[in-house]
Length: 189
Image (cartoon, rainbow, N blue to C red):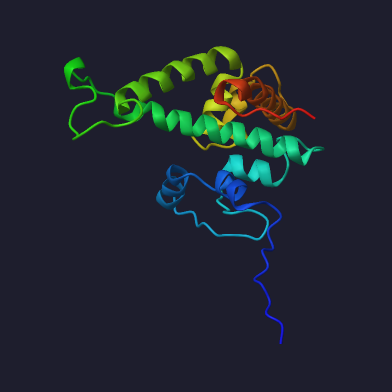
């Protein structure tokens, strides 16, 4: 009798699955808003987050699934950068207390230094995205809003479907511009 090995049905290796998995912050935000999460065969988690829905329906790059996933990863890196910036919990710390409080040497920067670096990167991201696209990126990617929430940023267009197309296009262009800054870029072919 032959022994069968357990087959791994996923097309992506486990390291890529972990990278594409939902962040703990997004899972907590989904639980707070009453959304359910589930694991699927084709993707690690499914949350009713508008940015994730855009990825699933290939709205980030309709004709290129690899570019669609790359833009989603850029958005995820931007979400993690915003989380590291700790903008929701700003407080002053005395300089002599930075890095203190633990026994023995610790690797890496203190949390306050990490937050300062992340805030600097967010300011640079805002500059790179530009004044027309940054509010859209912030609302859809960071805050988890939908495209229809950004229609007010497109005042010059009267039709709803055209405003949605402009919002989506500005989001795509901004994500492409932010790829290098957040460390997610396409490899050379």
